[in-house]
Structures are given as C-alpha cells and as structure tokens.
Image 1 (cartoon, rainbow, N blue to C red):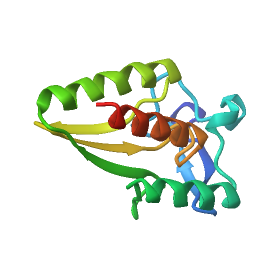
Image 2: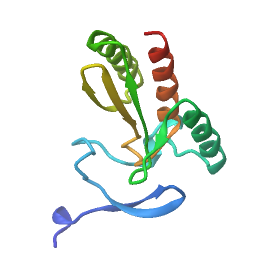
Image 3: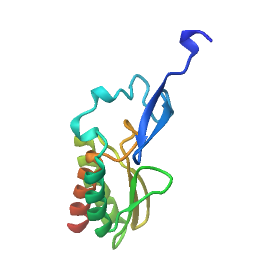
Image 4: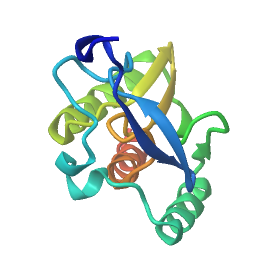
Length: 141
C-alpha cells in the first residue's frame, strides 16, 4: 500500500488502558488532527485521582458514566419545551465559547446530554467544566 493510502494509528488512553485508535475516524473533523501536543491543558485526560474526585462530585448531581465510552451522561427534565429550549440555548452559547460541544437529544421537555472530548477520545477537564456550567444553567431555569 502506498504512503498516501496507508492508515495512521495512534495510541489513546481509555480509563487507564492504552488502546490503538485510527486517525481519520469519522468523528475527527477534516483537516483536524488528534495530535495530543496541540490540545489545551483542559483537553488532557484526567489523572486517576482527579477522575475519582470529579466523577464522585458529578454522580452526586445526577451524572453517570457510560459503560461503552469514556463519557458522562445526564437527562434533564423541564416544565415545558420552552424551558428545555431556553436551557439548550444557554448551554449552546457557553459550549461555543469553549469550543466544546455536547452530544444531546431533545424531545419536548427532556434534554439528554453526553459529554466527551472527541479530540482525545475521553473525559477531560473541559467536560467537567461544561458539566458544571450545565448544572448552573439547569438550576437557573
């Protein structure tokens, strides 16, 4: 296979284990790289100690870890669609400022949110920071 047709691979950490990952996965934007050297300090994986602390705190506020991915998830329920949409709008503005966008799903008054840092394939300080903002936004609705 020619160099142009070869697939580059990197190794990523998932819950403390090293796993191979392919560059050019569908969730890596064209022209972007998963190069760990260009990520901000908030984009790096959490240490085991940091992870244990933040997961404990997030679980206390209703977030859960996903078994199949290194991500966190929570479902929010509001009085009506207008409240749910207003909440999503506030989160969207903050997410855009952070350049960190949630995976989410909305039906009427329910909003389901999954947070993961796709550029490093797992949970980072950015996810925690956005989750904390999301909690404040939900409480203010």
